[in-house]
Image (cartoon, rainbow, N blue to C red; front, side, top):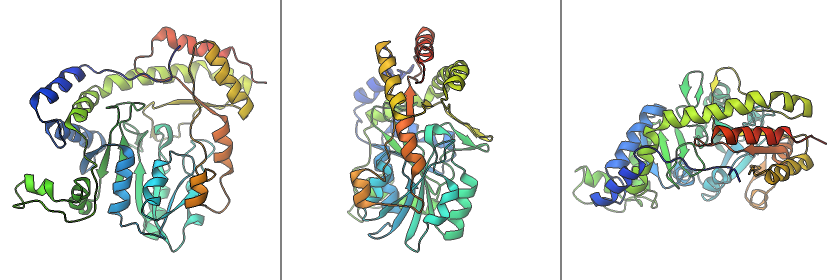
Length: 377
């Protein structure tokens, strides 16, 4: 079976893990944590980077830093992972779900203004598959209504919008280093801070509400509980693995892009003949080859193609289900005017093909041949 995903082991990974363990500094904010943070600053242009235990935790920190309170509203796409909604619902806020665009599957910026009320505090964007949202229009709307902008950049490390790296547009941005991401440490994340005024409190929140980071820098004579917070700091062992992965980013990306391009080129004729949509990459956007998807005409064909591929030894997967229609989405959120009909349709039609750095050429051939053997009914 060709798996949907297989994690890549980078050149220095095992050496760095051994070094971290033998060095005796396995808790957070050690040398590898600092090294990984520095590499991320270079890649994203972020003013400050804090590694976290997950992208989910980075989103939770964002909600705290923005002072989100019960009754506040936060606009976000319905077509995304539930972590974005959870992070703000945990603070008592109401997630307001907006539909996605039919081309990029990103939050539809044309629907944003209708979702704004006097309770709206922030907009969360998600760069689906690492393809940028329309950040110029979204940024202008946030400025006009004085709304905070948060980028959930879980898919987008290495992506660009008009020559600017994804993760550099919001006052806060979050990254994921889950095992399914282009670079990974099993479970991990990062909070990118592009607003210098948020850095000091972010360090406190990440360290269980204490000024421990200032203590270790010699800025205070003892560390104390000074604010709310939690344990969002990852082990330096995880940071060691992540450092090695980030150092291999160019190699990983070259391999992933090669697979992505083969799918896109060699499935073009089959897609056109069967009424299947392929990914859209708008002008001015550079994507990081995070995933490759196809949009089948309907749910029946999507399910049939997944089964067809399985019989030929290829593991494929569907993706997000509509948050606004989920039990917790109904309980804690609300739908923006106009509903989310595109999201509901896309959730039923989308299939993701295997895509990882170590996918062999022969296996790419097998995937392509298996897809081409399916005829849409």
